[in-house]
Image 1 (cartoon, rainbow, N blue to C red):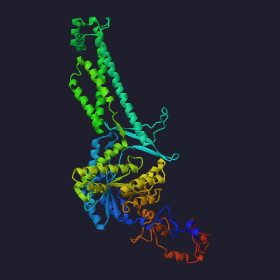
Image 2: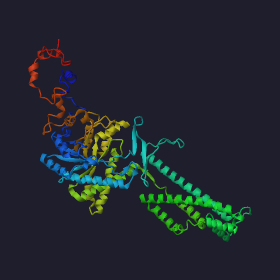
Image 3: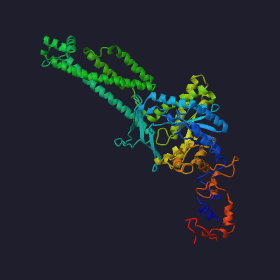
Image 4: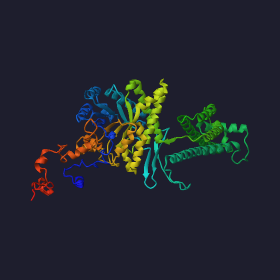
Length: 621
């Protein structure tokens, strides 16, 4: 009978819940009682497409859920929610004793757009996030409402990593960098260096080392180009000013002769000057060719001067961005040296001085470190996103003090920017650090600033999003390592299941997210984190039903408030079929139809009761 009860359950569409091994590995039956999540810790999301969030919250509350996440994913819809509705949501929350959270607008906190990075874009994102936080406080003026924002929205994956099954190591397949001067970003090819006997730098450290080398090579190449033009131009000028005219014996010109040549050159090339030179018969001594060569030399020098100016500005801006005081001092000394001469730089008579100053400038730039023009996009993104987040958190504290909303940063689906646990961890730590600096500047003590930073800035861990690492070759072991990295920061959890390949948002227990083990890890730091059920996609579209029951089953949640038997994962064994709902436990019809003996069973099960086949529905013969 034990084997029969496990494999041949005659209750259609249900498992045998009385089997002691039922649910182990897939639900929480084998889990210790403290990890059976009470129904009150689960929340449902509203429809993000509707501005009638008041009506949406009311519908979700009618399911029995006690926590609702108000969806403000798109700015256009969120800005269409009247402020009166937010106040009414607070009244509704108080009336039914529910909790409300907010999923804020999907904005790009780094300021990166398709056109590149722009500080004005970052400031706009900051204003949008601050507006959401201000409005969220209306949902719970007496507490610290959780407001979730994505770590990125539109940022390309700074580092695409895959897991090599053979070496059991991570390898970076794509690596993006950004030009800090222009804000443009590009993909760095990851290539094998056969010439130097090196394999591809699959680690981040190896790629950054290669990037530094490429930075230096590019800088030296540009300096070499400027130097080539400068020396060419200088050589031509010196040659034309240092010997006699065509057909004459080569000899050094006197200072007076050089001065006279430059005087002629100043007139050369203009209609008036050409006329004067012809009237004076200057060209009869072969000076015309010398004038032409001087033009050639000057063009080289002007070109070199323009390139030098661009490289100098690039070096100065990079030194400012990187707070390189030593380099800035050297560059300022050169500016002070060349400044008196710049006004004469267009004077043809000052060509020798121009050549000298260009060469001096090249030697200066050769003596400084290559400007870090390109920087890893990940570092750049964290720097700018943390500025946005810390500013919003600081504004929230200044306006609402201890009742300020909590800013919780969520990992987007793997494949988007800053989606890994380490990315989220580094972003939160950088945001907290900047918040502490701002708070101390406003007069707060270090300990207070640290406490508020830890309270106001944390993580929303989306278990479905991180599960998409599987399509890059990662397994359960690596997924749990990700959870371990972020666990100390988690304030909020988003629940959705999938098979690691697409963002399908199934109810928990219907994919391969190792949720039990993930919650064990997070539970070491925070067992009371709200768990929001995010199944707003295909589940609703195809099955037209709430995922609440399926979620409670997956977590083995207790049906009663005593947190003991019975549990929701045993409910399927009490139902009579796929479409009958929960049904009654041991209904009278079973005893009336089948009795209590073997003879009362249907004939297809060896009994004597006739009727229709349970398989085909046809009359039995």
